[in-house]
Image (cartoon, rainbow, N blue to C red; front, side, top):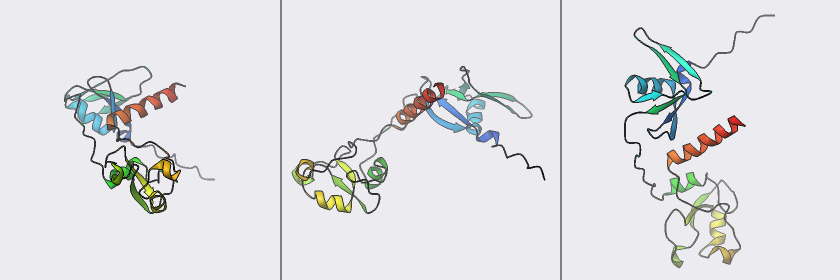
Length: 177
């Protein structure tokens, strides 16, 4: 019986590092290679939090201790972010390419919850993904006139940093449990 070679380990530069803003808000996950660039150029500093993994990166000129958490030291901590315009692609993405009435994932269209003919607007809180069948059934009527209900309330997309922060803290809570 031949010995099996050890399973390949992921390359260390592919490890993930959490980047925090100057105000200590988690912003994103980046690979270790990008973190090295931020640290060497002085754009970030390592954070030494409890239970934090660290890696040592060596080059001929420098030895870096890199934490799995780094904090930006430069740049505008409050970058401006505009809510994207209401578009077919963005509404489908928000609704996860699923009809908001029946859950179908094929033959998708857009539907105005309050029809435009009845004063509805083309805004994030009034446009949803609907399959052709549900859109046709609802037609030019209000939800209470059709007996149909929405699977989720339509709303504008969340700022990417806010979405990341929510996910980050959920993962931290699960890790601590």
